[in-house]
Length: 427
Image (cartoon, rainbow, N blue to C red; front, side, top):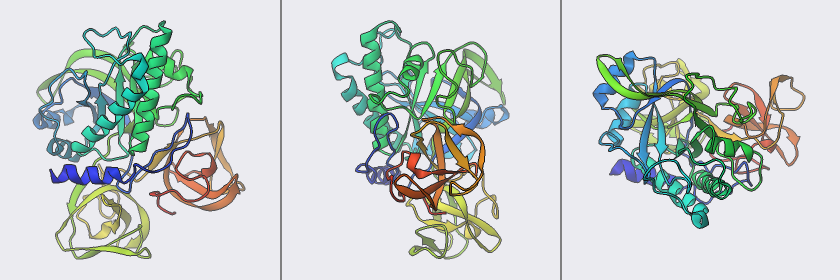
């Protein structure tokens, strides 16, 4: 109960932040938020495996698993999906892919589905997103997690149905963004994903941050999708379910799974470690920031991500805690000390870009050389920190991305287009 109340309280802090206009609506991340990007093979199965089964499957090539954490159309019981299960399996190194199976299209091909209604599609999308955020928080999935709304295959030629689905998914995206979560959609390549691609640049619908398509053609490629341009959802925003129900066995445990390939945001949670002396928590990753708390010797801290800062002892790593404060990693019993510690993710907060062909530069200004390749509109800018640089449009703020490059903040859909955006740290 304490875990639930803490996460819900943190969630509420983001609900009044402004949002950019469609299609690239902003995300109101609270102080506790961080995002996690997973690249590699994944699997999903109807009922979440037990802790023992997940432990056995460490012998597999997979390190991410889809979990059906809510929704009126969820088909399987989920006795494992508790905060304790989430904490245990993520500590093993597993990444979680949260799937919410809410209302389905009025023209769905799925038998016995609870369907959305054409006249209330937007309101239902908002309500389902609110429920998804609450259920995610209840099992310890932090703001900054990607929540995948499951929209099963439907009649692609039904124009009224298409409009209802797009209104529903647009409302899903805007409400998740308002609550500090990344919006993602699982959809069939020939219906939901196709229709989302058709309105990718529309100012009528909010664009989801990531898509996970179903196309069981045995190819795990994340490019070359029919009807979906490679310029859409191009920077850590794609996943594919490429093989359907079948059995696989690892560590003596057999599970019935689907095969997936991911380069996309997944769930974020916290990792608990203890400190080895009395330490201070600061408002940023440096002793130059104001002190916010004193943490006693051997007390537990909940780390959401790690970043760089001034070197303390032998470590330049700093840990962001669940309340948004920072401590030097040097005095925390993390396994990677003095370096970064897997499976704790690096600190980043992604936002969509708002212009096409955005240049990435080697420093925070237009005089710096550019990297090869330009970012298409709607790409995710995985922002690690901000600092002042050359003024572009209405702002002098520049964003350092997780690959070390820089982009002007003027074309990034975070809460401010004139100054720094909380809770992004300063570089």
